[in-house]
Length: 171
Image (cartoon, rainbow, N blue to C red):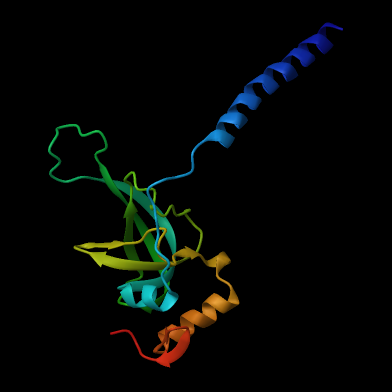
């Protein structure tokens, strides 16, 4: 009988812990600050300096250079992710390349999972190649047939104007 009371108390204790945590998670505010404009695939492709399929193999935070304060509140500037490139679709990519994403409060950072294949759209910013959630960057297992067909259409030198296909490669 004593073991039944102990088991019942353990269940009640665990329920007491899980309910408030669940309630807090449901009441939490959505991510703010990342307001992505609607960008067509052809425009995103043309704006990208590098488009490739690859697998992230390591990542590291990069600290701000020349920060005013000796210990700023958030010294992390961005996350650099080293990719093994499987296939380059635009730009010059070596067998490995480094892509950076924000680590700031804007919540637009793209979080990569090590070992998962991605289609990455990156633009150049100084010495960095950057991507974020506002680009068509995505896990390869979420790339459908229509997206692949549209991407191949754009890669072959076609675009859209007023929802009509035209022959107009990126400039």
